[in-house]
Image (tube, rainbow, N blue to C red):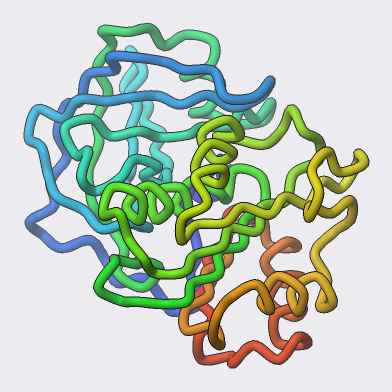
Length: 263
């Protein structure tokens, strides 16, 4: 199995991600909490032995070593806000054919130690100073780096218009659902639009189909001015479809940044 593509990882960007700087070293991190998010995804909270700063959208690499010396490592998005760097939250979806995600879902317990290094990546990042309006489009566990941006936006009490268009198979599969709904209900500068592909929508303004150009056009018109930044993260098919829909809706291609997981 390929090293990349385990879950809410940050495997492939449209611009080639440069190698991790030499200053980024492997370190021990302690798993201190596990929180169930959906039937197949959970958040794992790690305390680094050497805390580090990061930008919303960056990722880390996690490495496991078996008693016989065999190693497996995977990249995962950081879902926590940069302001909350004492604990690093990784949202990991269980894949039946994976090497790393089954360990976290079936074996890992609070108090366990694993190896981690980061932060990595400088293309798929956003900070409040970058301004907006900002449109985030996520599919499934691809919401993880976007969630870091949403949380950063909230921690900064930002007035930058930001809208998250999140696609999931069902209501139960919406990762971070309750937190996102609460942020949306605050009626600030952040808005949430869900598109549920295998169920009817439960909220007014949500959708019950896959992302397409008319949908992008409709959500874009909720913004007070033309989109300045667009971030898309998900599986290869999702990113391709969403990117084409963005361009079909008239979004400036130069404003779009994408990140893919899987092959």
